[in-house]
Image 1: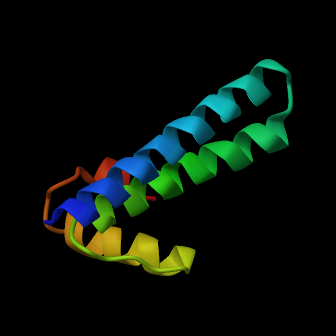
Image 2: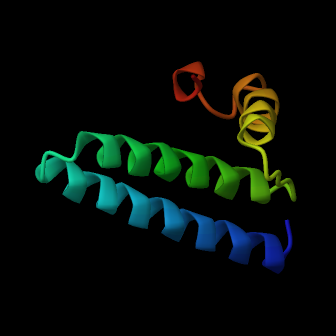
Amino acid sequence: MNNEQLDISKYRFECANDDLEAGQIALEHNKLKNSINRSYYAIFHAIRAVNSLEGFDSKKHSGVIAYFNQHFIKTGKFDVSCSK
C-alpha cells in the first residue's frame, strides 16, 4: 500500500461517513427512501475504501462487491456477516 492508496481510502471513508450521517438525518425526518439510498452508498463507499488499500477500483457496483467478497470475505479478513 502506498500513500496515494491510503489517501484515496481515507477520502472514501469520509464519503461513507457523510452518507451515513445523511442517511441518519433522512431517517429522523421519516424520509425512508432517502435514508436507504444514503445508507447503501455509505456501505458502497466503505467497501471501495477497503478495496483501494489493495489498489483496486471499479466503476461498477458489481465489480466493487465481487472484489471485496473474493479478497476480504473469502480470505477471512472480514467476517461473512459483512457480506450480502
